[in-house]
Length: 268
Ligand SMILES: Cc1ncc(COP(=O)(O)O)c(C=O)c1O
Image (cartoon, rainbow, N blue to C red; front, side):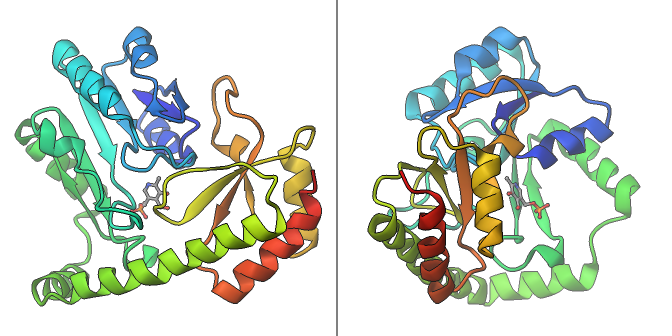
């Protein structure tokens, strides 16, 4: 199975438990490289097309088309991790690949970002030929997710309160992202940023000559938690050293203060 590189390490770790080999497929700022994917000879791919994790790129429209053409030609399966699709701040979210090729694409959704990761609830929208295999697997694995939690979520959705919650939280997270972006522009205007106005993290490229380890350690000494991009890489490193900065569970005051401290670390 092909995986985005850089990409979320848990994707690969999960499939490794099932004995599946991960093949790295490079990602650039237009998403996954579909030519490299086709050349790799894999029969399936797992990816995050709406908001690449962790680079924040959108899969470019021509690549979306090329990806679907590749899948049709090779009878391949695409697993689309739509993990934070509800949170796009500058426009409506792009449609899923699943909607374009329901016979080829399985889309994974989750309430981990929209409600709470502790709920452990999500969904799979998959090609009809896979429905029995997926439900069998789920039954064997854990005999299904808690019924009461599912019923509560269903009630939340049917009452319209889930949508209201999403609308409210989009505003809250957009404000946090805006605070992060303006604090970076004010305290560290020399840094290059990557990623869509979406989700819960921003990618910050490091000044020349600085390693991720150095930056992460110096930030931690100032009580600022950031992650290195390298933790997500498993083939050839193709991206310059960068930090993944999360803003999902940090208040605006703490974001401003954190960036001010981080700017001392990331001087040009
Ligand atoms: C790339 C990616 N996919 C999926 C998820 C959600 O996973 P789960 O629904 O298992 O909590 C996350 C959450 O952090 C994520 O970052």
